[in-house]
Length: 441
Image (cartoon, rainbow, N blue to C red; front, side, top):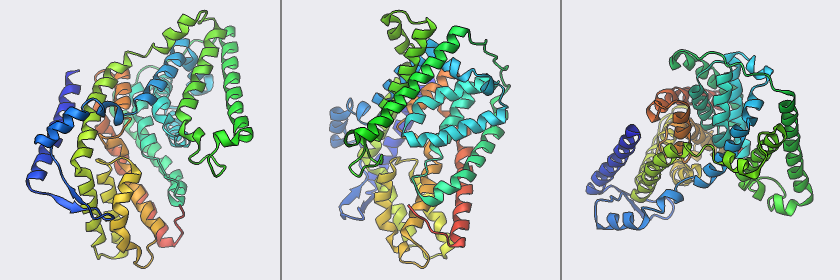
């Protein structure tokens, strides 16, 4: 507990010191579109103190994913308390998988989770820990592997990034398997007891209930399209996709409840409530991390340090006159470094794009290629950023399965994924560019 407090306080004090020095030296630039001044601000003055007093409490829920975390916590609590999670991960097919195959399965699931928004961060982490434990791998390695797979494979729907994702999955799996040796001795393979006849019937009933739930959603999309689909008749930016976290968590809770009722573990509604809050101890670590990381994010936004660095970095890249193959490297590196401070992709692109417009006028440079190069750096360092909204949730699960682990361990293993993704994706980008293939968004 002391290490978490020390680490969070250290990051906040460091940011306060940096912004105070930046304000003292008068660091200032102009917004590339509005030309409004963007000056680095410090909280060590009267205006900064007033801001802290007004927003100190609201920062905790304005800059967090608390609602999504609570939904995930309740649905996971039910799945674990009823035994539904163990029943799903305890099949003979999964338990007989080799460690290398299990690692690759978690990596693929992490990549596919992007089709369901942020559901991967909420549900895949405990699932990966349970799967790794079943084949004798450390559960904390499963959490870190799932986190890296989710964070480093956000393709942003660009054609090049989507197709090259196949190669990237292989690289992620190789890095994950190579890192298993650094986790220490593997635990013994956990062979779960075979399900009883009643538990098998309960599992079949729960999966059938889940299939009916998915069918109901599909039927709703076809019949009540004006409610489920977007204004253009597709799932893109539709109400269903915007609420996909609630939809999936409700589906998991529904299947877990059916499993508990049919298996005989739940006989009264009070047991259902006990299951929903069974993971409440996990919130101790989550809220402590949230206290520091939410305030840290709010302090960074107030200081405008990230915006200043983004504009200055993009202006520097736009002023370079190096040969075309060498121009992509600064774009990728600036995007990767800025991602450590500014996580939302749209915010970074709005600041970088106007400053990089001079590059589009060059021969063989298109806006699509420029955006793809930006996405390479943007995806590669997601898991290293202390400002990732789901980082407190990830760290809470890391400490839940390994009490001695923390952010330092996450960094120690995460940088290998980031470097591998950055190098491999950059090489694939240069090859794609050399072949003259189009970059379609």
